[in-house]
Length: 540
Image (tube, rainbow, N blue to C red; front, side):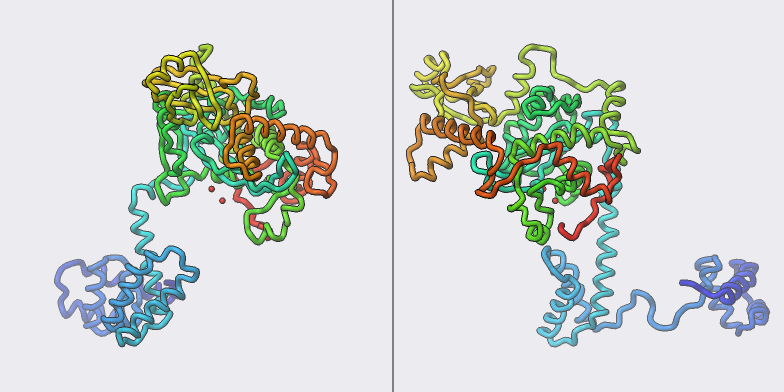
């Protein structure tokens, strides 16, 4: 509370007179003398002295306002009980209130009327709610989690802590078969906390599962050159190694048998975010938001809000296939994000930070053995249990064979099968927890197919009304669909529906995006830690 200079001078004079009186008994003569100096009655001197002795500072003598004391209640005790019960018991259980203040007033009024009591005013309820929120904030501040300030979840060395998260990208993709919109893809990212480097990402149309996490982790650890060549870019991406800790949310795919067994085998600790504490994954969530900002410049971008998606009409402009989008992301992260100054790194780039910190602490790599990478891959592949039958092993309606099966089929031995979703031409089989053996198709003439192609073929066969599906039908359908894709890739126009259109190159997408955002962003640097700007046309 602000006081005038006159009041402050008056308070200072009171203190200067009362302080020399000490703590001993005050005689009547002393009180009258002090009253004369202060121009007050001697009884007032006794009251002022009691206040001063309880808190011997000048501010204790500040003028007091008339009226009820702060914190006192003048409500009827029954009404006060209703307010307390609603605020402390009813309100915390309501998680989806559109207008909490209004709903709180209505609930208190309803209960008071039902009890035959006069309802309190809206301002009274508002004050009581404000007091409750302040008390709740103090209670939360006393929790152990609150002692760690947001933004202080840090790591000192590369691969100390790697955060993994999924998000659905704000863009519509089209099919390679007929150019029709197939939906929004899922992006899974692994981010190194110490350097802010992206250690790997995975793109798919299906909701992430245990297989997604396993494939993402293999990209984190293994060399990325073969994958970059397959994607079609020469971007430098040297960041790799075995993480010490994986920081995850509590989704089911992060608690799969494959992930837990693989991490146990290679000494990787799993750390899950506390439920209801989203800021513990802030680094990777900020990265995801920034990537979605960059996606806005691409054809088919939807924006992050429902209203924005309606205004954009992304279905009409969608042009990228899954492979196109994967290549764009590889270029965007490898050539731009890793090479741009990062505010969270005090202006250094993620790539430079990785190189600098890697000199002091070498990243933990796989042993220099011929089959070390294959063994690591196997441990993180999805797991299935099967029984060896007379004709071998069958999984995904595809038959596999190995000479050992001739002995195992006699006892119908149960085996553990690990499969690679991107290559079903081989699986890895283990019996009685022994080493895995590589098992190939029973019919070696079959081409390698992915699980995505397999499921797409099944969907096409079922659409024709066929219930009994054979292995031959699956491979025949996959080959037919591949021919359609190859023919579509050779065409220069008409990739989607019947409207002619040509697909720009990935480099063209980057140029368009830069031109669109040049007025709002710096042309030289992209600040990947800056808060995301909200647009009118606007999380996993």
